[in-house]
Image 1 (tube, one colour):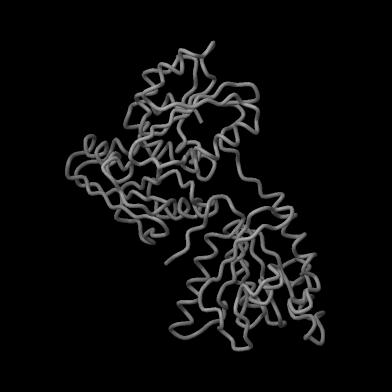
Image 2 (image 1 turned 120 degrees about the vertical axis):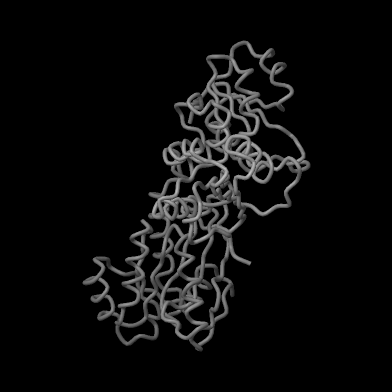
Length: 394
């Protein structure tokens, strides 16, 4: 089963040749036998992930990858798995243990092209007779002074962790609700339909994260279901500054909201936080060009059993076919499944991606852009199909 990078946890990947000590380094950082360690090159055959809390960083995921120098038919498959990890990580650690760094250097350029900061590291300093030659080679070719560590003695591990903290502190995730939409003291009303899709006994992740952010900002937060909008508005002394709803309830909420209240959806807020909202808005207008010969891909971040009220499998396809024709061709993918070749599609519609990290979503957007395929988001698409896209705030 392929791994899906979860939410906004910091993902840290370890890259390097076979037997460079990546697995030992993971164990040294976690202080656990997280990864299998052996002198046999190629012991790590698939990426190994360890979720943990790092002091000063919080929740993060460490990823031990197969060697970038693997060979043979199976080796090429392992290298391909390592390449997939580059779509997910926020920080890369390039682990070296000899002076020949041609392959590491080529991989660092791939990571640089994705905007991923690379920390160069020399491992096995307790075994190497000298690290000066490797250090000089890295400095000459990469312009960075490497961190020198020993996974066995843990020498340099604290310095490595501090380097990760420094990079992480500069890697800020955009807020969910911008302060121009709601700030301290503002009233925010959340309209949350509790239909058959809503999980029993709990709220979904976007709702929880949005509420927490608004509470931290000292906003006045209140919530109701769609059928209680009128009653909720009646209890307020003044209209709410902002109303946030599920995209599927856009038209209902828009028709009932006070004129002075701004309106948006959880899906659109997460589209802005994790993706490229301007590209989504631009791409949504391509819906007007769809017809019965068009092909649309609907992509969901999470895997679940669809029901009769499923937004991605039922409601959006109904809206699209009502607009473009009953024979509009629609494909669905979920979780980590996403075609490499998108050329057959006229439009991609992605969910809010609350279960993906920003790096992973931006990689998908970049893939669509490179192939000149418009890509939008559930909330933006529904706003367009409801005729209110120009009246939505984000």
